[in-house]
Length: 288
Image 1 (tube, rainbow, N blue to C red):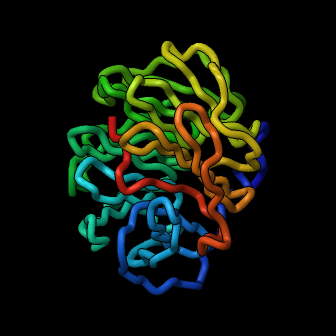
Image 2 (image 1 turned 45 degrees about the horizontal axis):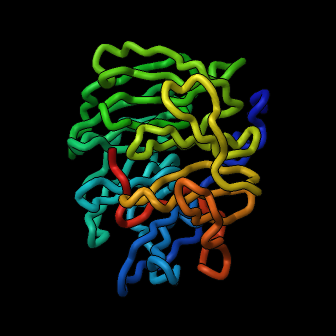
């Protein structure tokens, strides 16, 4: 596939071919960090604080890209090779598969439990009700969609690339009507994104590479979170809003950072049973 100007690094690393190796599931202890291993078709489970790998989720996992956990403790995995979104209970049992998607690369839920999917090659963002394959709304912002986030007011933000430029766009009040307005901030290649409790937008930009901090009204980059990235794809924040998790497929690491300071608290990699993480979410995830 031809490289995309300004984002060739992340585009090449994001696309992949199917893999054969599966990881055997296990269950044990406190399981608090869920890490998508795209190349291994598995979601690794690491205990909080000590970061011990205690098993994997592999049932129906096929090319896991972004992941998320809702307010009830259900885990969602965007499987780009499925293509589908799989939902698991807090005990890691598969409870639903959302189909009818093209290339899901990111997934979020709102406070009501509705499921939002960022579809890269489908060039859209879709909203589903719980355990429903019929979209409530599907919107096309104007290009390849690589990230989605919902703020505390229910506004939906999307990062997309139109073939020449990248944008962050806002659907005020949600996707109903598909009325969006591009915000003023300029980014190179918006990927995974998330809001904190103050509606500050944290956005992975693998084209730089950096994790940007963007304060309301989102007209400019206010700062960065952490450093030393190669290809940061996804970022999430824990429920207390005092810790952030950045998955960097380029370095093959998950960086655990204090929030909002961004001080490095742990670097998770091969010694934690990880091999090319693409996304990581805490068992007590912050859901605006």
